[in-house]
Length: 210
Length: 155
Image (cartoon, rainbow over all chains, first blue to last red; front, side, top):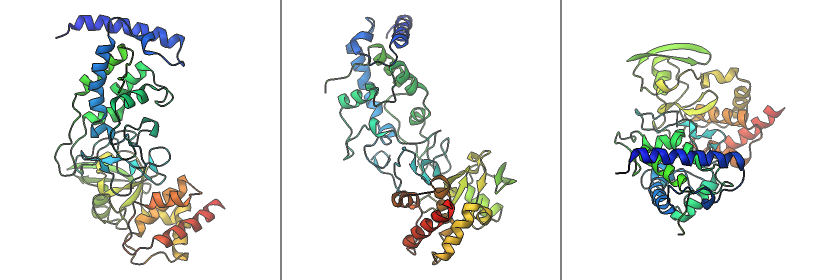
């Protein structure tokens, strides 16, 4: 077990470091070395990234991070039924949006999943190839840390996204399928996913080489 | 059972139903508004389409408890809706309908499309209408009617 007090102190140091950096260079790319505090090593960060990657590539997440014109459904990640398409903004076709069925919360009576703002991730955040194969760890990591692709999110913003975004939260409470059985969950709890993200951010968001 | 209060076609109504009851059942069985049709019951065909806060929505999979304060508009209100009227006139002029069962859903989606996208491309028409199934195969006339209605809406 890791001493919780030590983590708290380290996290405080890191947060102060990040705040200082973001304040002075909010719009410039951040190299891993310039933000890596001594307290969280690159090796720890890479281990944390692998834990994150196991979540990001779970069907609850990756089904909406497709490379093509449609979302996916189910643990077998089949193309979404009913001629559902991505549309120009990721919210579906103009009069056939995700909200035609997906409401602000899960509809347990029907098995239709829901969360506020249901939509596909942008193509810049695709985590699959065009033939629906999950992209390698290094490729996903590079995309997530590329602020030209990730809506200009820096480390703290990525952490906030993983901690608070409604669709991220949904993945950990996906509700029942239409047959009443529970949807499968990502391999980490949400708390562990956030903790892994925090460790990775604290380590300077290192990416594996392959 | 629980009292659910919803706004339908500008009228506030209360129904005593299970919160999980799909809106379609509330419309047809409780409010006797049978213009909205039951097709598949799993959001696959679009026959049950209504507008919820302006968004074309499958009422067969929408539990009434999730409607909240969002206004619902059904096919019964389309004759008094400016775009709805234009679309219905185009439907008649183009002689779209064969058996007619799916057509209230088709019209509700078409109206939502033209309200958001007054100049829809062929791709936008096909993608937006792609979730509305017609077993009679009136798709070509539906697209023709939407284009005709779009011209009227723009005037």
